[in-house]
Image (cartoon, rainbow, N blue to C red; front, side, top):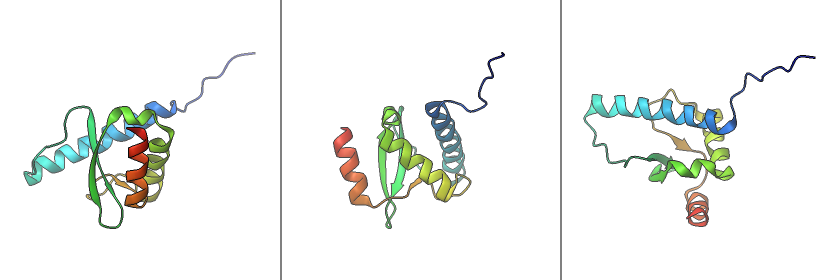
Length: 103
């Protein structure tokens, strides 16, 4: 009996690919519009809530299941081929509580 390999990447690898796509898109947008690149290495920016408040969070947080879940929901709900930045589909107060627990 042969062992079949799954075509699916492990969840962490898939999320890293999503971030890579987002960061390369954001970089192109910054270059086109001349926007400042104020996100430190090892971090990424997300927009949260109705007012789209901007948060810069460490990539290391991808190891947290709650962040993974939010990124997957963002991909399902918004996709990543838009000019609005990486938008997280949750209320800002919930996101702040989550980030406070992770820190």
